[in-house]
Length: 62
Image (tube, rainbow, N blue to C red; front, side):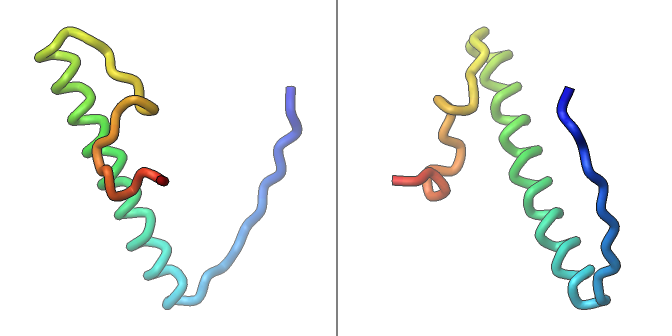
């Protein structure tokens, strides 16, 4: 089993705001990906894995 370290940080109010907005955006994209994947699974009956599942082609590295 790997070792885990825990760290605590105390962001400034400005950093906290940026962190909340960033994580909110990440959560939004993750939830959208899960929703689309689930919908395709129900409609097509096939489980689509993420590497073969370009939801946002703009974000895919070229």
